[in-house]
Image (cartoon, rainbow, N blue to C red; front, side, top):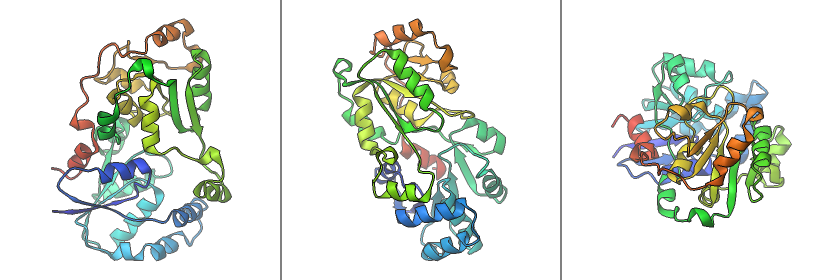
Length: 319
């Protein structure tokens, strides 16, 4: 059995997906202290010269460790810095990168470098695949097994109307306007914010400020199962299906989204998906007609193993 080490993947939903892997590998996660990570991200963001030295110091055992046959890195800045240090150490493991976000100006240089030297890089974003010559993976659902087991709430017994949970990332105005024009009183809208300053990061770590607190992934799935409509808003330049869309499809929920990629997906049906390009030009009557019937008109029947994390990792491992 091969040993596969995951570096990064520290969100609770990512831990859930790794811990629930049901394939023939010895999966491990590199343990990382939250306070140290926050400190390193702060140092790296301000480009202090001691950044790489500090990473080398805190992760020196990992850098020289050769016990894992395959090491899979996410796209967190610390993860990519660790990959550079592993390469410099002459480590003989096989390295791969699983991108969980679109390539940005912040990490574009690193991605191009790793691709040039032969590191396999996988992304869900078709635009990034074409632009950078990367390998594509199906967007997947971290809660694949959870939703299959727990999704038993009849649509007429759902506690919430419209549901949104996510970081602002420029989406707050759009989400709040959808909430307002829906006319539904029992919507559940939770917009979260990233701490900008180090002191705010400390507040988040020690749960001192509610605006920085994230719901657990399992709690999010419960909210989704108990909602009639799921709002999925993508940021400018993002392409490909989001995990939120796949979760909603698995839970047989109607979707409200500005993601143009869904129009070409196997899941798209105008009676189940309300697509809009600009929130300011939404036809309110058309939107309210869509909301009149929360029941999915045609059950989604295309969700299968290909949209599980197991399937993605098998593809990354070329099995």
